Length: 357
Image (cartoon, rainbow, N blue to C red; front, side, top):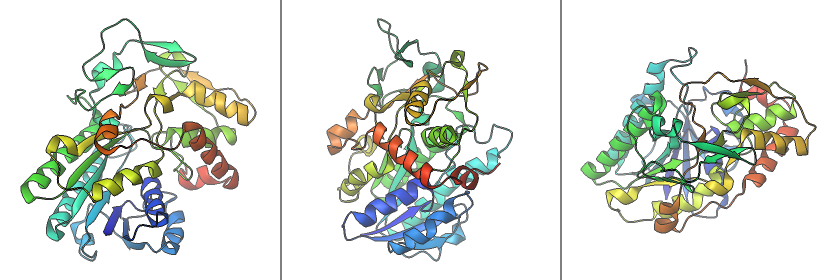
């Protein structure tokens, strides 16, 4: 099968390309990247060694896609992944929409032209912020959990947020671009009879992830802690109890293999959560404790000022993926953190390379 991975030299795209190439499956892999993200150039040579045919192009420019050969499937891993994009005073809201929405339109038109299937890697950030921000939580072992003996919003249990949870605005500009991309992808699939799958991912993490807090908190925290860079607990009383789940992107490949070979499914079965779930979830405080056990302890500063779109507990429930695809993640959070730490040790300049000031 011929597979095109967009954002191929980013962390997620390059990890997927490695996993596909090393799986032994007889795929022909193509990659597309605009190389604007610091650190992406570091993945180019290794992917070429693996036989990935790379194209330098931008999904925002339809003409950049004209030189790419026909493929059987597109796996769309190209995005601006920051929930603060367009609202932090440092980035453009227009560029966010161009990257995450116009780019999706261009890739869907590419799929229509070549009769290719489409897999969109989406995000937990499509879920409505107000009920998540207002969720009653209590700290247990230095990490928030939904408070016991209270009524939880529909679509949320102690196992996490499932696909029925509200996607009502506000979800952030970033979340809105991904949610709209999901809707367009499903409509293209129905209108033009294309296989389309939407995989809403939790927090993706692993070695080689670019060192920005808004794009990979686990890798950023471990790299910064090892290098004794300043770290800060923001909001929620400054205790670092806010929780996120953790998924290594290579664990997506067994799922993707099944989706690429599947017949066309009902619309409701094309959209699933893909995450490490409650077993993988860690708070910032727990992440600091892990780092302190591996390195020497350091002080974390505190800023109790809340930030836009912050929520205390975000864990995805992937029960639907287990039921439909017999899928569950294989990499534990401790294994992922250990992998990140080894990469950080071997690449002492990684933060400066991938997240220059």
